[in-house]
View (cartoon, protein in one colour):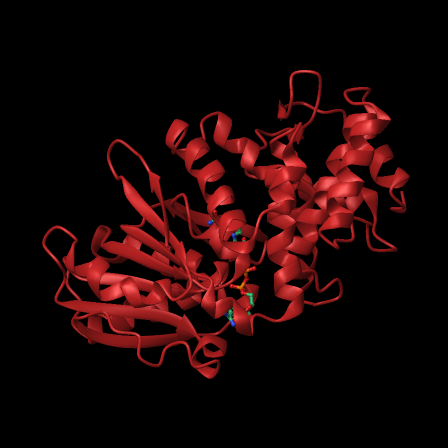
Length: 353
Ligand SMILES: NC(=O)c1ccc[n+]([C@@H]2O[C@H](COP(=O)([O-])OP(=O)(O)OC[C@H]3O[C@@H](n4cnc5c(N)ncnc54)[C@H](O)[C@@H]3O)[C@@H](O)[C@H]2O)c1
C-alpha cells in the first residue's frame, strides 16, 4: 500500500492506494478520533452488482444506501432523498458517511456529509480510475443543476480516502479512458517531463496523480489561486457536459474524462491561436492524448456560439470568459478572454459559427 498525506493544516488526512485497500475501512474508522457508532455506506448499483460491497466491513453498525448512477443521479433530489433516509435510519452528528464508487458517488456522498446536520464526517472508497486520481481527493463536493455541472456544492474534506486498485478490474473500458483524461491533465500540468507519468505502473501512476493534487490542494484548499489550475481543460469540458444536461438528452453522451480530453486539446488550440505557445507544445498535447488513447477532437455539428455562452457560466468565470491556458510562464489562469478569439478557436476545431 502507498500512503499519500494530504497535509492540510486544519483537516490533514491520508490517501491510501493499493490492491484491496477497501479492506482497511474498519481499521481506518477505528483510528478516527471519537469513532462513529453508525456508518452510512452510499454507493451505486454497479458496485453492488460487481460484488465489491460483499465483505465490506466498517467495524460499526452499517446501512447501505444505493443511488442512481450517471450525472442525472448527481442531483439535489438524490441529496434530499439520502438526507431523509439518514434521519429515518437515526444517523447522528458523530456518525460517518462512506462513499463507495466513482466520482459521482464521492461527489454526492461528500456533499451529503457536508450538509447533513451541518456537516458530519466523510470517508471515501474510490472505485473508478477517475475518482482515484482526482475526484475523491481534495474535498470538492457538488451536485448538478439542469443549468450546468457542479453548480451547487461545498468544500468538505474527507477523513481518509482508500483507492482500491483491485476493484478497477471490473471497470468498463470507457471508464478507464475517462480516468486517463484526468491523467493527461496531470501530465500536461507537469510541463517538461510530464510524459514520465505515463510510463509508471498503475499504483505509482495513481499515487503520483494524488500526490500532485495533494500538493496543489494543500497550497490552496478553497481554490482562491493555484488550485484553479487543476481545471485545465475543464472549461470546455463542462460546457460539453452541460449541453446534454441542459437539453435533457444524451446526444453527445460524453463522459467527464472524455470531455476533459477534448477540453485539453481546445486549451492548447486556443493558447496557440493567442500566440501563447508554439506548435511543438500543441503537438505535445496531441502526443500525450494519443499515448493515453484519447480522442481530443470536438464532436461534429456543435455551435461555437452556444459553447461560448455555456463557458461564460463556468464557475471560474467572473462575468467573463476565463480559461486555464499554457504560456511562457507555464499553465495559468487567463481572464477576460475575447469572445471572438474563443469562438474562432472553436471554429478551428470544427465547430459551426
Ligand atoms: N470533486 C472533484 O474534485 C471532482 C474531480 C473530477 C471529477 N469529478 C466528478 O466526477 C464525476 C465522474 O466520475 P467517474 O468518471 O468516476 O464517473 P462515475 O462515478 O459515473 O463512474 C463511472 C461508471 O463506472 C462505474 N464504476 C465505478 N467503479 C466501478 C468499478 N470498480 N467496477 C465497475 N464499474 C464501476 C460506475 O457505476 C459508473 O457507471 C463527474 O461528475 C465529475 O464532475 C469531481
